Length: 360
Ligand code: NAD
Ligand code: MN
Image (cartoon, rainbow, N blue to C red; front, side):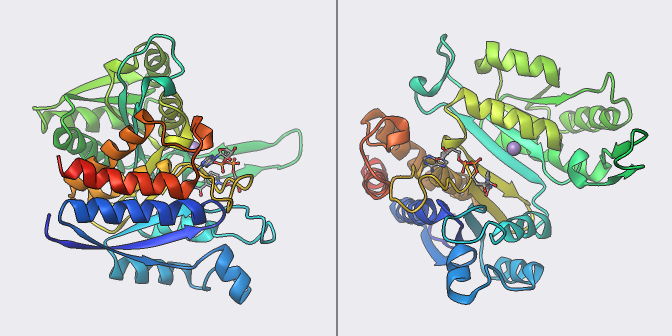
């Protein structure tokens, strides 16, 4: 709530995270200041810089590290993990990213895909787009349960299990309805394939409609995942909040990102509503442009916007959105968006813009 103080752990990680996380943290701080929220940001040196100093990118006890960070902060702003030109390819911050996702049980992967400007939409017919993909983030076919029998022979059998629990499906459906209610969306669309996956998605059907019954002010609707992909391309303006399982959500969130300008403009949250949550740009370490001062800070800053919104600071979150819209309108953007500016100049523009917008 305004007047409060929030404590953010900022972890640039590897590669371009070092360009965009300090930038995003600066904008988040200013948006907080412009709306009466004190944002305290502590930077943590894991990944490439730590490797260069100490020979190791991470402490040995990663789960312990995650729990320690969680006990001292309200949220984590993460950059990216992966290859960095300054370290051997085997050494990176990936274990921390995976640790953060699993130890914190961030079961909601929140991927808003709002259209910043019509020019970012590849569709010829321009319509307003404001999609939010809510992906179940801990179950489905991504649990790695399964195995291979007679591996490497022509008799090989490969089994990948699809795990769907009542608890997991119920909490993600409930989150989707509550998110829609709290953010002014009229309906929640659930995507599955229950005609074929009768057991797993039969559970999704029963749980989704029972959850819809408990949230009568928000309409529930269903689409088969394949149909939804087609309709999203034809009529993206007909959809808003979409909830789905881990794998469909993985694919759908990239489709939605593509409709509004690509993953370079996308922020995401890995949220556990009852615990500390993590926020990150969707893009990776961008080794081709990392550490050159030319990276686009929008995706990381949009992750900061989702973080502020999640923490209940809607005004600060809206200021960030307004500032980014203004930057696009006035062409105060980096090269990937056709502009002339570097990361720092865009960041300074955003910081000034949040104060300007707050003063209106
Ligand atoms: P990438 O997202 O790093 O880059 C894809 C393209 O987008 C590149 O051309 C890059 O220059 C551009 N790009 C990315 N971020 C940008 C920014 N902020 N501003 C301007 N342009 C930007 O994906 P990749 O090249 O497939 O992967 C590179 C590394 O990142 C790999 O090691 C991969 O494993 C890792 N990765 C990490 C994450 C994560 O940490 N969540 C996600 C994806 C990939
Ligand atoms: Mn993906």
